[in-house]
Image 1 (cartoon, helix red, strand yellow):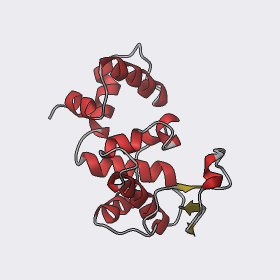
Image 2 (cartoon, rainbow, N blue to C red):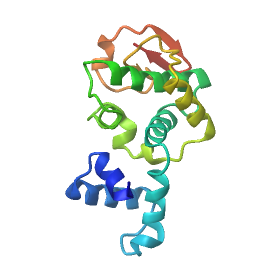
Image 3 (cartoon, rainbow, N blue to C red):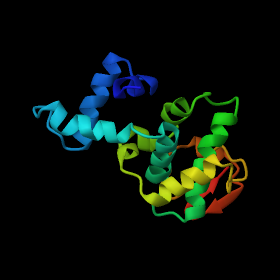
Image 4 (spheres, rainbow, N blue to C red):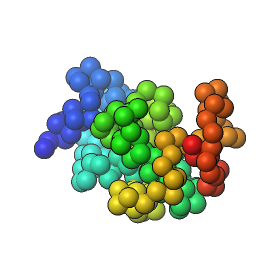
Length: 165
């Protein structure tokens, strides 16, 4: 599969692909005036190579829970996978992660940060079925969350700074 096909698999059409390319260049401080193949293409290849499902989950875990206890990182991955299993959410990992307003890190660009080895280990554990979130479909940091809808959730447990519901 080519990198362009992988990006198309992520739901990008030509218009969206161009807009995301501009956002990507901005996030990684790559001037649009520079040759695309010199900096942009190698970085995009790196971000979309290997096990796509593992990479997407590790990116989500890292961008949402770096600095949290390892158990909390696995729990964040489990929430993403619990959503994938739930009829209330989209039925593909890409759609779960990129669903509008689902994960702030996708819209603010933190999703593109390079995950560390802990995030990859946590993603592998979550993919194997470990679920410290006890089946939760939501998590949030009550000290940072500005969404009013989270107040309607009934948290089941706390891991680090995240509440899981």
